[in-house]
Length: 446
Image (cartoon, rainbow, N blue to C red; front, top):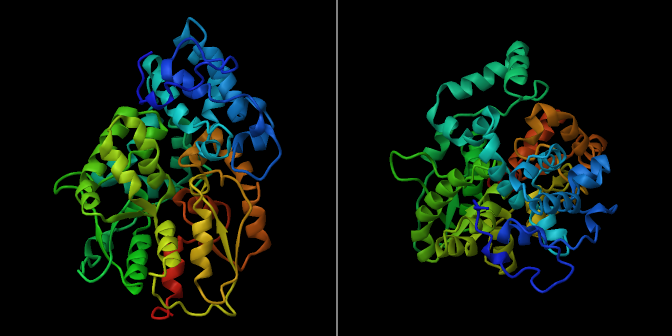
């Protein structure tokens, strides 16, 4: 089997272990799967992130271990390619929402989302990619290069006929409003005035922040300046498409295209990294993509160096608060509504909720709670796909939506773009990114 991703870090996994049960086909990819020891921890009742689809259905095939067992069987089959196309296996992999919970919570750190990306790429050898997969994967391209794309989204949202037609022909659920792109001219005019006497950070503006919620980046800039930090925004060379982490391609199994995007981004960041600057991003799935998934593209030290110096916005602020370098005046929130915080699955996967808590505590008299919930159900494009819409709603009811209904007046913070989209779709609410909450709490802004 020729791999699309670099699985060499697993080359010694399970070797000499009589219980490893390494499949006979698949090489290091098979060893990455076989790190699961079948303890079935992922099939127990718990408050962990993994495994969202198992929690809703109770179907053991939809746990990390269940998927591993089926993948092992497929890779032990001499007709491996045919076995990978087995309908039961396809369903199990399809319903993996790539939450990354297993990478953190499984005792052997099975990385099912990355395994799924390789699986999708292998399956596409014989089945190809669907039109919907291509459309979703190329979202960054359409947002940048097509003036009709935003118009089509708005038309589809306003006209039920077009929404139903799109569901029938493309497989995008008619019951879910799609996020609409906005004018992002504010990013072009965002003042970038590096000051030699101020700590410097580099902002990575992901596709979703750029085209759908540029206010997040603008607010972050205001907070950083108020805290005494200068910043720059990393941009693509003139004439090129904006920089992207390749997340949308990787999610659909289009690994070669994802690799191209990661390489472009890392090359653009490299001069800043060499200068010792910190990279700050806003979208958990994009930052985790740079820090973790990108290492599987075989790009070597280029990615390793970027990964070491890349942080989520909340992680960076938490680090600076802990080091007593973050000098900022927030207004007292006494008498203000409670803030409820929903963590993106990937935030939880990298342990960033501790950072969220530390930053939120920096606001005087701030009453906040972090919601005990799993995946919101949107999970990138999962929640807008017609065959997944019902499960996406069920996932949202696993703690998130009941808590929001019980607290109708609460301010809602959700750092994941897909999480905010899901909350807006399920509740008449205006969830915000942490950057916007912090900006709104600045004394100079009140």
